[in-house]
Length: 157
Image (cartoon, rainbow, N blue to C red; front, side, top):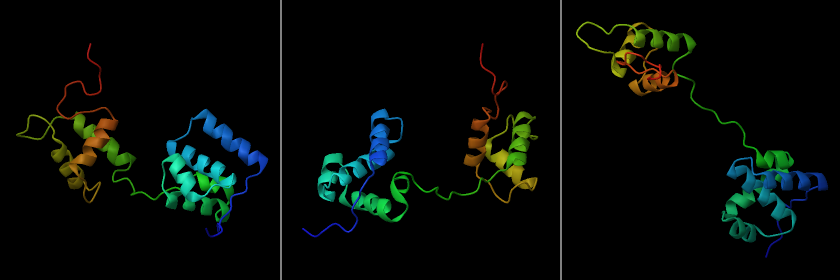
């Protein structure tokens, strides 16, 4: 068996912190698994042993081991870097306008606002270049509004 390229050597303080982290169980399963990988790697176990013990994969174990040794220690191995996400389609002003429109009377010929009508209205007003009815629904749901309901957001009773 070839020698491990990345050997994890934890200090006593790091080992205690990882043990505390795994005992408390207040973190995501992903973080707890990574902490357990580092603890087992520090004991000198192979990637295959660790993977079998934790029901993980050998490449995952190797990746965590490498991250610990090259990317900044235990903290870098456990925590994830923030991921880029798409910018929100609607800003605060557009959301406020959407809410106001949804609470207003619907256009001529319609009994109530639909999500597609609301999306079209936002484009017509020039607040966005394009927006899907799903996005409109998500924003209204966050604001506990529903087009067409009389008492949007109010609890029954």
